[in-house]
Length: 121
Image 1 (tube, rainbow, N blue to C red):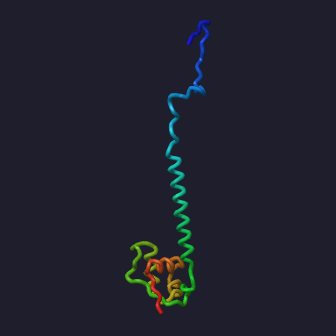
Image 2: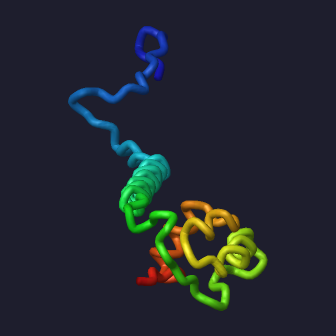
Image 3: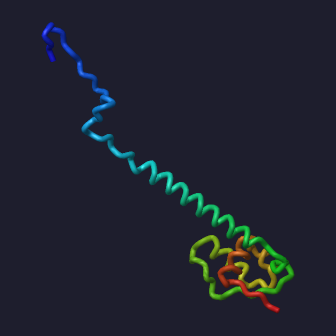
């Protein structure tokens, strides 16, 4: 804007403290908040899984001499490595035999938690 003396006055782009800007600033972007929430949910799921694994620790009932019976037919997904292992150890009469036939400790715990393994008296 030219003034009477011929000089140009530059208007500041900064808002005046007494006169706020007519355009409000945009709200914060929601994506970072969503990402943070997803990370927190993932961490909670991981903590729940770790608690479940601790609960499945091998108590005395998983002694190698314990007599067991495995569900037949094979309940695992056909073609999976768990299916192939189960085919080998499902004939075992004790936990020790099942381990010798290829069962991992995790297999025994999982099968027991899902009802694929029954304890005999």
